[in-house]
Length: 98
Image 1: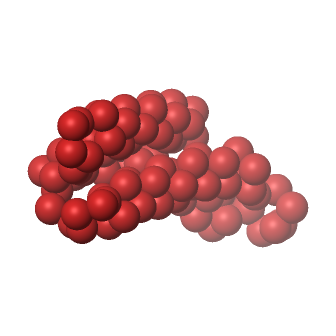
Image 2 (image 1 turned 30 degrees about the vertical axis):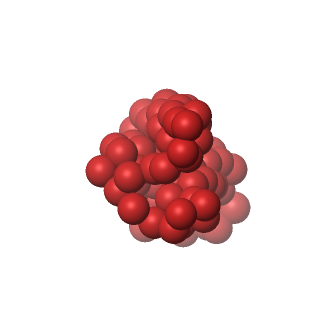
C-alpha cells in the first residue's frame, strides 16, 4: 500500500503540473475550476493511503521508532505540495479564480 501511495503521489504531482502548465499556456492564462479539479484526486488518494499506512503502523507497533515516518511522510509531503500547487495555480490567476 505504501508503494502505491508513492506511485500515486508522484503521478499526481506530474498530472497536476501538466494541468497547471496547460492553464498557463493559453493566450490569456486561465485555469478553470473544472480543469483544476482533475488534478486533485490522485494527490488526495496518495495522501490518504500514506496516512492510513502510517496510522495502521502506529496501532500495531508499540514503539514510536518503528513507524515508517520517512516512507509515509514523503508521499504525504508530495501530495500536500501538489495540492498547494493546484491551489496557487487556480487562485493566483491574473483574472482571478474562474
